[in-house]
Image (cartoon, rainbow, N blue to C red; front, side, top):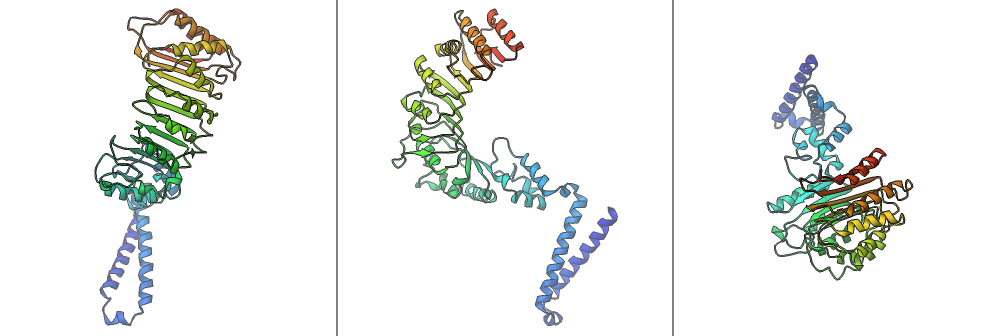
Length: 415
């Protein structure tokens, strides 16, 4: 290896001397009599040989460069941030391109490295950010895109021109790329911006809108069909405006998540929306203050006949939990496919004796149901207990027996 290194370096030095000589002799009489075309061809051959020798030397000095490009590309993919990559020279994939010439070639020519993008529009050098984003999207080529946008609570419209364009984000840099967007997460978008994005990104499979701000919807939006959307998350710090749902048709929706909702949004519009998404299998809802009545909650759950997993997060215990458990005990026709059930209560409250038989009977009944039809196999009920209180002995015995028989079950304080 050492001898090969010496031979290559001698040849490299010889090539560099020849190239230098050709440059210094460019104005001599001898050179003027030499065919320009032949000289250029010789320079090209020498430069190509120099590049080949340099690559061979790099492999000797840095054996890692000998790893096949396909494997290196896969390694690079595992170096990406878990959430989403962002245009930062100190993070992958941009950081990987700063290591050496070969790694830069690999990163720039591996579109999958640029398929996810996270942007935080909280100030900074906006023109430079737009430039970096344009390069990022160009390197992504034709791969599917995953985009994560975070805005300050007050910002200019993302989809409309405004006088403060230099200080506000613009959607124009994404104009040619909405059709490749399959995953999106947005923070602090207005209701109108949510609708505009859904109208543009017709190939979305997964979509998340958090801290949605109230606004009127554009008059031009009358209906939005997203034939491929499977996962939808909606969140707001106030009441969820179901106006957006009134325009949506999501025939393939299988997972719906409502987070940080103060008042329940289960009105007629919501029920109508559920009827247009009969394949929902997972439903997760976080409610803060206002809870639905037993009748409303039953209507909502009954509108999801394919439901397999349900999570209900409440600020404090409410009768809807035990009304639901009572229904599960009384009829296997209620949520016949339910396999996973989670209740989470964040406020401390004394356990009431009347709740115990309702819980125990529902668990035993649904475990005894026929496998695949109404059988509950995963159950969690997490609630804040007084530090001196203990779980009711009937509940403890029930949990222990069901766990021994194969149910994945937990009842008690948050873990």
